[in-house]
Length: 161
Image (cartoon, one colour):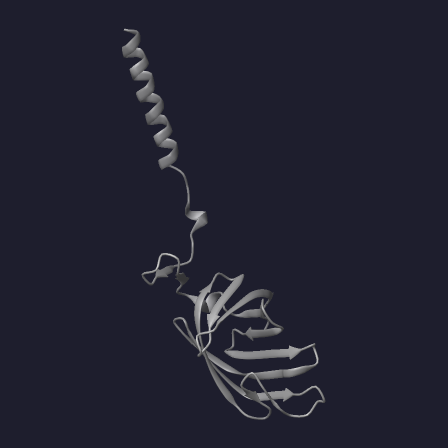
């Protein structure tokens, strides 16, 4: 009799616990849609249009890039806050994980403030750069440039158009 009572109590407690775990509301923790391209370590958000617009700082250099909701882009890559790409502006398009940035207004100066070329940008000349987004969660952005170099950025401000 004791065994039967103990067994029925265990079944009741198990059913009770199962009821709590199955009735949990997890809808508040919905994650953005992701796509796995076959590599378990390389999962990316597929709707980058919602998380890309922001000001991003490259974690390995002084480069900053801003993607804005209206399709404009601005890049700055200064050495010692003094010379380099002082400002490159233009427009960008986003198609899946591909960004095409068309910089039409480019200002590049050397240490003596003379027009020059720096990191592929030449003063006064338009330049198109293609990036592939590896991942972007709204706080960190990882892209590859056309040469395959990985660029790591952290968000430092929201995009205010």
